[in-house]
Image 1 (cartoon, rainbow, N blue to C red):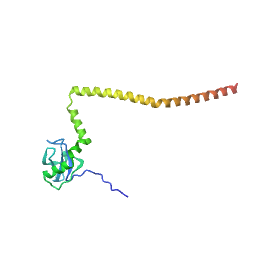
Image 2 (tube, one colour):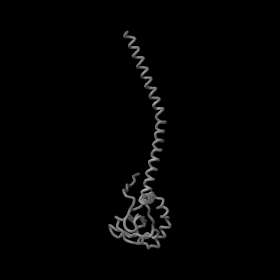
Image 3 (tube, one colour):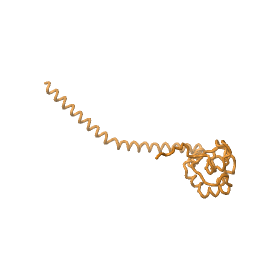
Image 4 (cartoon, helix red, strand yellow):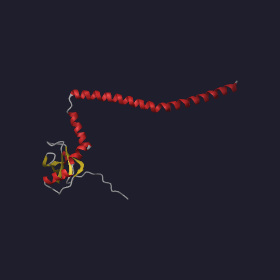
Length: 170
């Protein structure tokens, strides 16, 4: 059975949840209500505080979430579908939202907070390196012992053969 290969999974379509990357509502989510033209869409975010407005496609990122409501539905229907699908919870659990929050936390750090973070990371890395070295040592010690034993056996064999050869020559 042959599957069709679809290169894209996120389409500009009614009900697609988008993340706004530019403008006064940067960092908020909303959903597409209608496609205006090739470069812009009508969006609405009643639960996130984004009013119904036209946005350029260059100002948004398409997410994997999609809700169902009628084409060009009013804000009331969009709000109802948003709550029904529990998009606020889904969004807050997504990796995208976590990265966005972490980025803002890092941007809000003071000089002293950055210094403390640097020190904590260096301490963590030292502990990690020591544990890694212990694991390597525990792993490679038996291998080294077997290699030493093999080398010792080879040396003994070579020594015996040299002694045997030197005894024959005399």
